[in-house]
Length: 145
Ligand code: ADP
Image 1 (cartoon, rainbow, N blue to C red):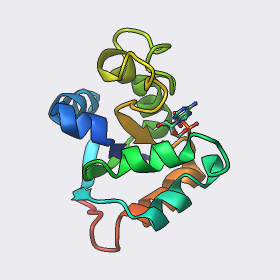
Image 2: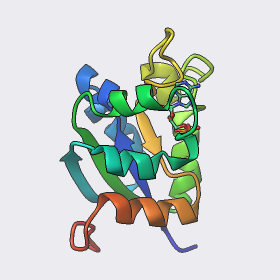
Image 3: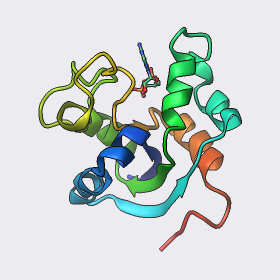
Image 4: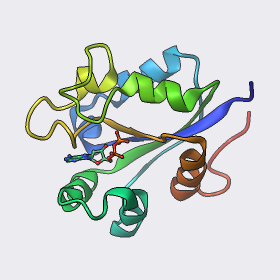
């Protein structure tokens, strides 16, 4: 199989709680390879594009505000079947519905913000990964080695 590359964002809840290293260690324990990593503040424009599928939802303004609370850490991660496997490691969107042992189950908010403050974004398909890697990384920021 050809390895895939996925786009992960460590969201502001993970950055504020200082758990990004612990979460990254879970990805690295799977043998996934870091091809790009950087910290960035997300503009309204990039968030409107990234979250266009929820732009009409009543909670979108809260999500946009949340995603701008701190810089995020963007990660380009490579591995066999990495897109689906990272989604499995994360667990479902709602951290309160996420099983113990999943990243959202272990580190997500367990309160009224459980559906929003859920630690990481990760691409959900090959097509999404391609578009999202381009959105968050410039040419030359993703390495082949
Ligand atoms: P996922 O990130 O699990 O793929 P979605 O693409 O459906 O989930 O939603 C994008 C992000 O919007 C979620 O990760 C979460 O931060 C936020 N979100 C989704 N649903 C809700 C909701 N009902 N209330 C608040 N925030 C939400």
